[in-house]
Length: 326
Image 1 (tube, rainbow, N blue to C red):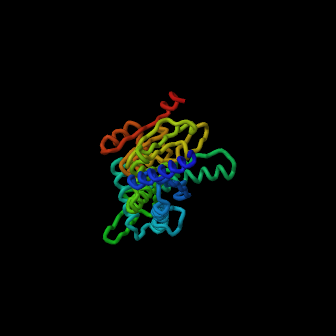
Image 2 (cartoon, helix red, strand yellow; image 1 turned 60 degrees about the vertical axis):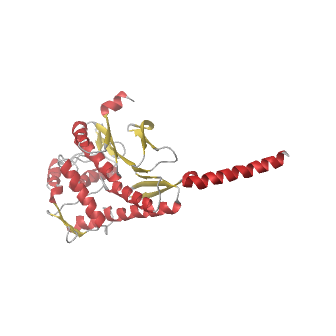
Image 3 (cartoon, rainbow, N blue to C red; image 1 turned 90 degrees about the horizontal axis):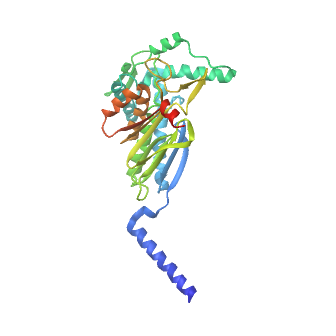
C-alpha cells in the first residue's frame, strides 16, 4: 500500500510540475552559462537557450574583428595604418558615438589618445623585459604625441562610408566603448531569438536582460583595493552597468599607482583621486563610455555630466572612500 501510494504521488507530482511548466513557459528551464576569451577579456553569457548563446557570441566576434588594434586586417588597424578606411555600419556608429562623448566632455573622452597609450605601454614593456625600474616617458615625447590627438581631426564621409584622419600619424583606440557596444549587439541578437532573460558580461561591461525568474539580476561590485570584499550590490532589469578603475590595469613606480586610463589633456595617466566609477545606464555602450568619461573628468565634473543625461546613475569611489572603509 505504501509503495503504491508513493508511486501515485510521484506521478501526480510529475503531472503538476509538467502543467506548471507548460503554463509558465520557460521559467523552470535551467540557465546555461558559457565563457569565452574575446576582445582581450573574458566574455560570459548566461541564459536558458544554448543555441541563442552561440548567436550572441557571433555578434561579439563581429565587433572584435573590426575594433581589434592588433589584428592587421581589422578596420581600426587599416585606419590607423593608412589614415583612412572604407567603414562598416558598426564601425561608423562606434566612431560617431565616440565623437559624441568627445563633445559632451570637452575632449576628456578621446579615442585619438592611442599614440599616448602606446608610449606608456612601451615603457612598461621595457621595464618588464629589462627587469628594471619603470622610467616615465620623456616630457617632450608626450608633447609630440599630444599634437596627434583630438577627435575633431576625424573626418566622416557618410556618402562614401569613409573615415579619415586630418593629420598624418594619428591613430585611435576604441577600448573605452567597443566592449559596451559588443554587449548591446549580443543583447539585440538574443532578443531577436526570442530570449527575454539573460546576462551578458564582457569584462565588467554588463547588460541584464529581463529578470532571472521573479527577481532582478543581482550584480556585485568588488572593493577596488580588496577584491575579496564586495562594496555594494546592484539589482538590475533591462539595464547596463560598467566600471572603470585604476585597480585592474595599472603599474606602480616610486610608490605611486598609475592608471592605464590616459588623460587626453595632459598625456599622462589620470590622477584625480578617483579609484573607480560605476555607471548604470539603459544600454551598455552608454555605460562603457560614461565610466571612462567620469573617471577622466573627476568627481565634481563627472557628476555634473551625469546630471545632464537622463536615466543614468553614477557611483564614484575615491581614495578617501577606500581609506575610510578598509
